[in-house]
Length: 121
Image (cartoon, one colour):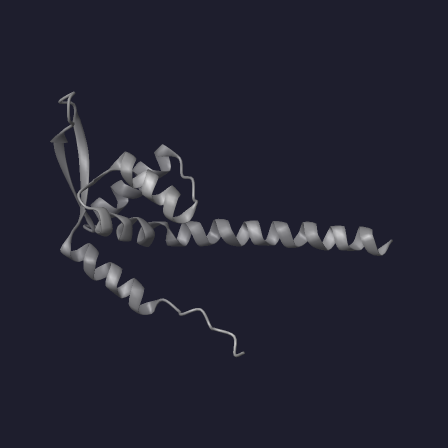
């Protein structure tokens, strides 16, 4: 086996390992990230929340996955949802806001987060 072939296999393994880690990280962090975005932009519609998620993290989430996560956060008492008339059309849309319990949960997550170590130079 040549050195180039071996390096290619190592690169492929590393790429797969990193992709797996990123997917696990995204699943674990989606709820706190969404709660933070709601806190920053409340009241916020679901479409706007999806745009904020993409622009701040680069993460793409299916509409179904987003609604499922929002519903779970509402069921847990972390979000409140108000139905409001959309401008111009009058159609109902859902505006999300962080509840007091959600703010407390978010503060707990932030308090437990690990700071990334900085290299000594």
